[in-house]
Image 1 (cartoon, one colour):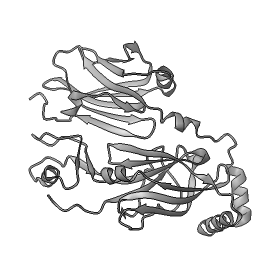
Image 2 (cartoon, rainbow, N blue to C red; image 1 turned 30 degrees about the horizontal axis):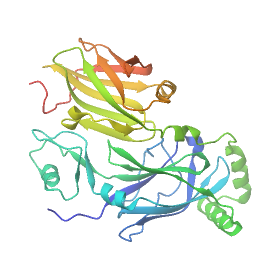
Image 3 (spheres, rainbow, N blue to C red; image 1 turned 60 degrees about the vertical axis):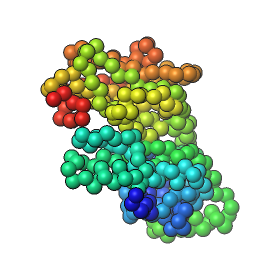
Image 4 (cartoon, rainbow, N blue to C red; image 1 turned 180 degrees about the vertical axis):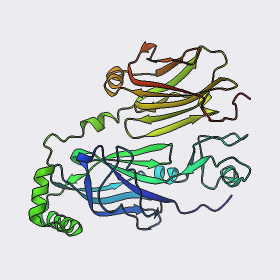
Length: 342
């Protein structure tokens, strides 16, 4: 077994929309190894769960954070001082999640750093491409009213660590220090700061929508076809809560029921014969899917039924039609899988 390396990753700052942008004032991310880590300079960016940019690599196993930031939309300085679940973080930073098959090799959903199989696959010059991605970033999402969500990003897999609550800074000395540091960083005069605060103020800002996105249910995707030659190879799911995951063979065939947030997008690949390769995408309707799941308990299925001729499909929740925003089917997919028709 190869020696394990100190985890290396990027820190990201995202927000739900540009009108909810925040600026970092003071930051520290604590690590198990005692290596100092920090946040990017400047403002949050991107969308919920994805900042769209990274900066200098950070190192160590993240164990918590102490952040001070400014939210212009409510003219408030917040402080977030948190600890992450230590044993979970020690486990997650060692994981490498699969993102595609390797030619003629069986892969697993994830492998641990130092695993001989993992190293063999990643270093194999005969493989078409490496198959596993390590942790690439620690993402902090800043929603209104001090709501902060933290995720670990592995590329096609994104896992939520938790939802945290920042506190409004009210201590006069701490508030003055934070404001002075903010003005100095951005080279604002006090007059311009007040003018900008009035311009950006949003009295309706709240975090209810992003708390709703975190609701979880027991469900699984079930994709089937009337065509007897149907073979399903991959399902990629983006969730409203900012998480992502991927299912490949062989664990795709097991398709276990799991506690999940609700899906925003499905992307999936299938074949029904030589030269009959397809990619499908389903874009869910936020209001419809949350309304239909509200109050549901027990095990549930989001079912996708593909027509025999591969030209259409329907979406159902527990055998009842589920309206979605958009359905797309792309023929002539170029993706090759180990179990493809040959």
